Length: 297
Image (cartoon, rainbow, N blue to C red; front, side, top):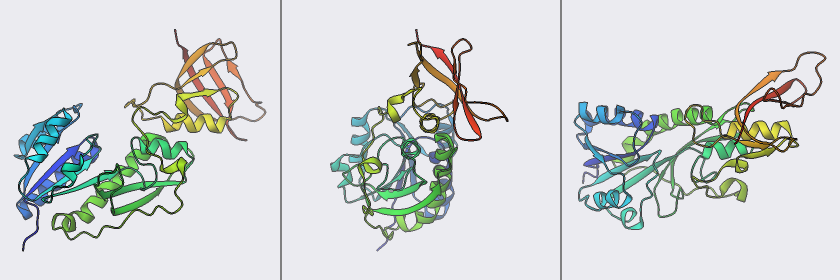
């Protein structure tokens, strides 16, 4: 009996979705499935919609959770759902449908750092490695059996957007490796390895949470402050608000930029320059941390 999915539905956001869609378009010529895309979050560009239009992919703009649920409840054929960068949580009645196989990309090595913004929490925790996971979707958030994982190093200067980019590149590599077995329902899935689980690394994080609550004191170590700034740094894609601190004179400010700077010979530790809106902090024996700030009115 042919167990191949007749329909493949993609739901998600970001570059990983574009890469997955383009791969599925090429595979469709070989496997003959119907390809659909659900836009649950408003997309900042028309790239996905244009890709769907050019390749005869059914495009559905469903920004309401109930609407997505109704759409998936109506699926009668054998269907593979690919979730990547996706905020929609599949309810039990969808997960339990026998004709649906649902896989999800998570940007960490599950069971570590489940939930939202996993690269940020890996950096904030001081993890030496993180990675990408594809797993089956179960009723619990990011708790399903693993289909594929790959680790990468988290370097001492790595920012959240850099780690995120590396993880998404690995995730696309992994999707290509598991796709044939997944669509044919032959994929081997193994339970997540919960040995060594800890509250610090394995607690579910929510979208409203910010590492360190997004605040530091000037008395904190330069390394801790640098780690916080790197953890919330997604470049131009500002996921988190600016990090805040209180100066020695009591003013509350927000950090608008930061840079690790090599300390020149003979330089001593530098302190806050309140007049110039710059804070200098010792980072290590060879480097300082330069912070530019603005006052919060």
